[in-house]
Image 1: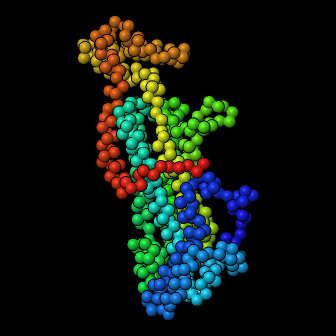
Image 2 (image 1 turned 180 degrees about the vertical axis):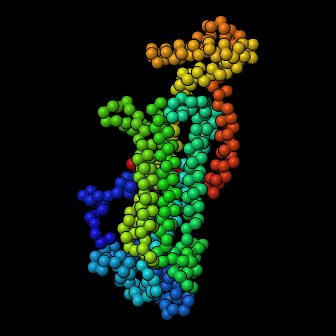
Amino acid sequence: MAAGGDHGSPDSYRSPLASRYASPEMCFVFSDRYKFRTWRQLWLWLAEAEQTLGLPITDEQIQEMKSNLENIDFKMAAEEEKRLRHDVMAHVHTFGHCCPKAAGIIHLGATSCYVGDNTDLIILRNALDLLLPKLARVISRLADFAKERASLPTLGFTHFQPAQLTTVGKRCCLWIQDLCMDLQNLKRVRDDLRFRGVKEQLDKMVTEKAGFKRAFIITGQTYTRKVDIEVLSVLASLGASVHKICTDIRLLANLKEMEEPFEKQQIGSSAMPYKRNPMRSERCCSLARHLMTLVMDPLQTASVQWFERTLDDSANRRICLAEAFLTADTILNTLQNISEGLVVYPKVIERRIRQELPFMATENIIMAMVKAGGSRQDCHEKIRVLSQQAASVVKQEGGDNDLIERIQVDAYFSPIHSQLDHLLDPSSFTGRASQQVQRFLEEEVYPLLKPYESVMKVKAELCL
């Protein structure tokens, strides 16, 4: 407040998180207006509780404070802070200026951390309340996607090398499972938040006014900074989940099997007009990396809080707490937008399966030959030779995998020629994937989403 340039001016730096990416509602929760309005609300709750307990505070003073909660003179507060070098006292004086009758009882019996820490806890709680339904909506959109494509075979990858078949829906459920863990962790850390409180008889009254179920019994001057570690650890874990999901989408876009939404007038490249870059997924990965690193701030801050407190936490927390929530808000808004418009190309997936399936089917072919009376060892050798010939065509000549054609013209395999189409049916290689998708959604995902049913229809909007 006391320093810095004109943050609304193009001549002054503005955080891209606020100016480009995060939602207006999350930016407001971390705004100066919300913060200092909450300070005033806390002073009002304190005065009301003190009046109830018998301190000489009049109804007129209480009403004067209520009437001026929104009447914040930010210019005066900045001037006062520059003069006093103390943000809380600057706002005590500024509030007192518009509440002359109540000026003498504002901040009565309180420390700076009464307003500072309790406001931070209120902001953390309310910011988590914004994130929870957004994450639930992402899970819901991906659940719809997984259910629709539960049986669509696709080539699995381990080490990004062709592996056994899975389904598009089951792969999506791997993403959903991680996000469900994040949703549970966000809910847990939100419900575990405790108010710093005021202490003594005031504690219960002000804690209830602030909407918290519990307050810390023991604090130094601040609430323990381990709380910040807990909150940002959960957000960092969310960042890891989103980074993994969006990396998978980017790799699938390169394979042309799946794409994020691409708008009609969207430009992929200023130089190459044909390009369809996965810019939303790239943005999520970029910001998720930032989110994952932010947990280091509260870790280090908590480790150096000397005795009852030290002030070297303050400037750091002003930055890392807000940035963590604005970043999480952005990646959830963006991932919801992606999940609402994912495009799958089944023909491309089918072509890639055809290229790799012949090698995967060799064990099934051997078993069918043995059932038809052949020798397992003789069949194995035959297929080994034909497989190497087919691999040479693929690698040396750039041709298609022709192993099945070679088997079809080899008289040795005539007893099973009529079975080859069945043996090469991709759906026979996906096991119980589709049933697993259905069971996972019904038993784990849908019950978890039930508390958020009322907000599921909200669409994601990207700022830029």
